[in-house]
Image 1 (spheres, rainbow, N blue to C red):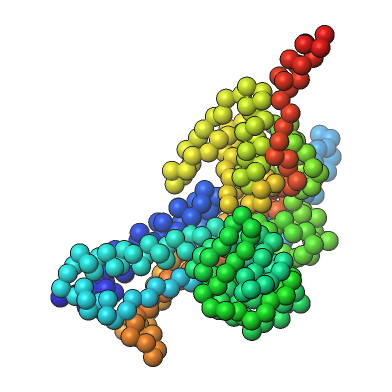
Image 2: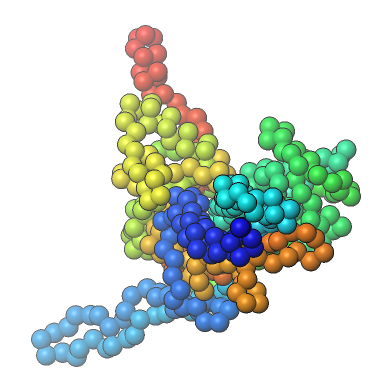
Length: 401
């Protein structure tokens, strides 16, 4: 006989291990490459000491002269709050009772619920990794006939529940809206319920997530704001390398960033991630110069083309015209624990939803992302998606002559 106890044991013993593996290695190639650690976690905070520059106790001198004066390493203290990452499943009482005498039906039920939870969790983890921690997923351009036209729908997905805030940061009456459909060509969003009027520049946030998400690449590269409790104005080493000049992608501009970071920050770029447009531009560049596209297999089974042995991976959450060059050894996801089920009284993980004939279970992880060396990372924007074929030019010149 299958009952709540059977379901709880299955979720604890069988599904938790699989869920941890899926979320930690299959979210996206970058997330799979970043190390995870429970060090430097103190209560609800992450407090980490990061080295700055070189030890000052090195020098030369004469045979009988004074030895170099000892000077300790320079350090900066990073401080951030653990972010609360949640994922909840819901199973109706009727569904459990209907499968009580059929183990196959019960397993199918749990598989379907867990697959849905993992798909949604991986989507949001991948989005947060490239986000700025604010939880913003899109800005309203216009609103008519209960349909919102957005500036971008990259971060949106059918089924997502969102809160709408005004451009001034105040919450509107549109809270807990669920997205019914998305027209990705025209960048429009429709909802399962009719929302109240929205205004241009209103901002969508994932439900309850405003200013509560992990410190992603968007925050690391936003040099207008402080990070980890430190002001960037007086800590220039917190500012990464950026270039917003409109230019065609090439080996030369990528190498220029790699060389600059190696010479000035001591970082070693081992991962390049970009938008789909920038990836196509680089593929066109390689094709124009009759270059073979080398492919490598990354952790988690992801395939990627390479630049000088460095994997180049496109990600849906990176703007089309953007390329990041990263030293992933400087990134750590500090966590209080790995993914766990929230347990109630008596260790129960399935709890009745108050007032409803259904049971819920919630996965949780308390963590935040820290980059030890922001100045050792690079970002190109305004990358052109077309290149001129040099071989066409040579043929045309030959014909003219």
